[in-house]
Length: 318
Ligand code: AGV
Ligand code: CA
Picture (cartoon, rainbow, N blue to C red):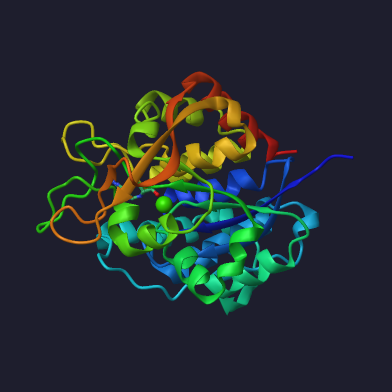
């Protein structure tokens, strides 16, 4: 008997979040039991809509009936509007709008309550994949702490132990990663639980920036619809090659998602750490001997990762 790993996915509607949903739908080894969307690096309306359309177009027949839950969680520190716009572009892509109606429905419950329901109904322990802030998980733990027992492991894209994070905001010192900065207290709440955590931090994704070469390769292979979809999605976040900003797009969430299908792509080590809740370094994750244990991805087989990505995307054509 083949065992399918049950997975619940909470994302925040960025380009790589939506690409991650597409890739999860191509994995034969998992059983996607729920999807929810938080209003962080997106506007939640187009992000829920795009998620429903991606499931319609790329989900297998046995996913019929899966719904997309919307979060009403609010930030401590909101994402820049320009980044939040990306979900509108993906939602408007012709590839996702060929069919006149959307079959996949929005879930009746709020994201964190939907997750509690799906976890409690699952017959075996569930893998959680979070590619945005941890707010919905923190809220779910507050409402029903018994869900801890239903969680196999949390994969989270967030945090960094590097001296420089990716937050460049007026009242911040730049040491935090954005998903942690959006709601530092939620990170703290999850850290205070007994959940096993695998963290994909900024140092974990430094080896997988989205290069111009990769974009060209996707363009060359756009006869495969799934590869065209990757290229079209990332065209909404084009490279600025003559202008140095933090605009380099890493495959942050995509790497986190790929590990669920192929854990052997990465190596990791365990650290004890904490998160700073407020002040100019708020959201910074720091090493601390008395802190909680987390596994951090520290190396990626870059070529094997891109090969797997291509393989999954081509799977969408079959
Ligand atoms: O910090 C990385 C997280 C990932 O979950 N997000 C983007 C990924 O979805 C925030 C972010 C950091 N830099 C960004 C981000 C950028 N230049 N554009 C959009 N989002
Ligand atoms: Ca994200």
